[in-house]
Length: 426
View 1: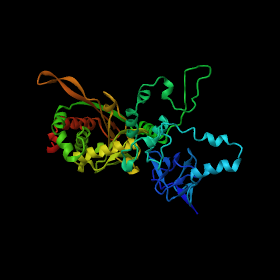
View 2: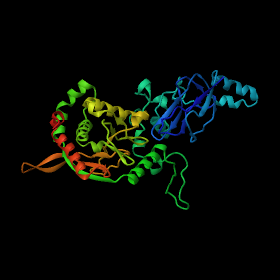
View 3: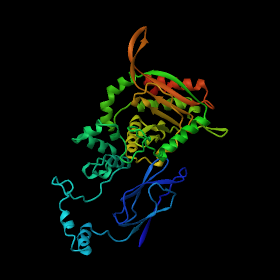
View 4: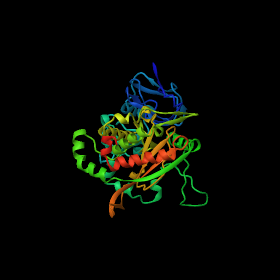
């Protein structure tokens, strides 16, 4: 009896998905809960598990095909796969007794190192981003220790494996440009050598990002205002309490929690910055769901921290840490990527000194953080060096006036330069 493997229910905002990678082929044995295929949507990669034990039957949706909810992806047949050892013994006997050299040649391929002879009991659990890296680097996932849940191999595990093995320098410093390119054939300019080109389709996430960025530029009157903040007080506070904070809460005290708390304070004072435009209406939100821009292997994603006004700094740091881990292994859910009333992006982690962030529709504002750099400033008539950061606020000028945007950014600046304001609400 056959069991159908169907596309799982998709959220209302997602109409279809693309079959990304099949992990099983027809005739392979499968176990209940084992990942069969990855589906790529506009926001996340979904893993479809096997509904029961059995043998992989007909695959009805090939890689690259667009599918919708409840479409049949494949069939699972009852029974178990044939043991590979038996099939090898039977094949030479059935064909002919004459080609005797072929069976004798089989013992020769296994290398004396023992690597290929080592039995592999079960396929290791590998996250989507790690699986792609394993494929690109032609690695054996059985040799990579996984540190994720249930021993799952994450992208960080693959990178650590590459760093630790003896041949890692080959990947750190490629001998030539072509070692950085995919293994598949690369079209070259006709008549010219050494000028490789490759045309690849955008991933669904990248296409969605492009669509939303163009949408933001076409439908919002974006304007950016700048300021700078002296982070000396925040850095001293962090240095003084970071060890005790980590011991008590089990998470590092970073800078982002200070910025989230300062943003919430500013949003409460200027509610229009927390609002959004819906046609000819303005929707004022009485909650503070802040999107934290995170770079992932598939592109930029913005998971949402809900009800930030009710979260402690430890809750905020833990939430951001979880987002970072999930973005690397591709396990962010739809719920974590949906909604949001305001966003924060930190280009400083990549060395950006100043930039103009772009809105995340339908939000009306986004705060851009940048690199912390010691610069000379004047304090009490004296020139001193201080850890300074440029701040940028991009806002929708249709509903946010320049006065409100400037005062909003000044509120964040004051809260960070005097963190006691966050406690006293002044």
